[in-house]
Length: 85
Image (cartoon, rainbow, N blue to C red):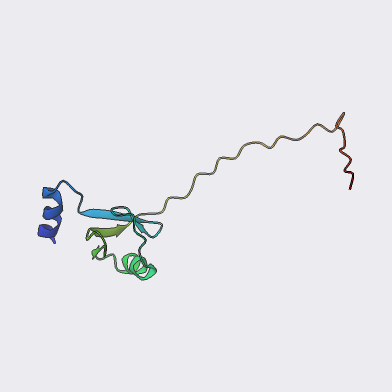
């Protein structure tokens, strides 16, 4: 395993890649769902079928939601639009 990693390092490449949203961040190819589930269950090293980097699963961070206050329209002096159908 270490010699495989060292071959990438000699060429100036990273020998490991994250899997985010079912995509290898090394080659940007979509991973089969079975591979992602295997990574999450076993936690063992697995090679990407495309770029041959060692894969590990990224911890999914909860998306940050920014809530802006809603603007309420002023009711006084507001004109109603009449639709002519």
